[in-house]
Length: 172
Image (cartoon, rainbow, N blue to C red):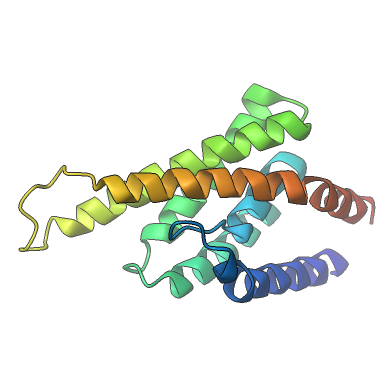
């Protein structure tokens, strides 16, 4: 029960930071996604897959509601990226450390943006204004790359506090 309360408090605090603080740190129209970075770190340091997916689902719902994109695109992208990261963390990387978790953040961010872009392109099929289906806008790729770099910077900043927080929760 105490883990549930701590997860709820952390989720609310991170969402407040996401919608109130990070919009002031835009860089060429992009900002970091603190809920995504936290979920990636949970994939590396959390031992219970069910808790990870519940935290990721609620985080993805909040991100999806706040984004303004068609509902479900970011939700599915978020969950698949986190599940992929959890699989890699358990079966490929082994014991997590700072470098592996940061590298995993980069991989998860790439998966997240590829799936998001694919989902938006699938929805764009029904757009009658679209003349070229497979055209990828250069500005979207630049924004994705900037967001990946900002997610990495945020991962570097949040690594030790989140790791300490998660290990303190596992001891309880």
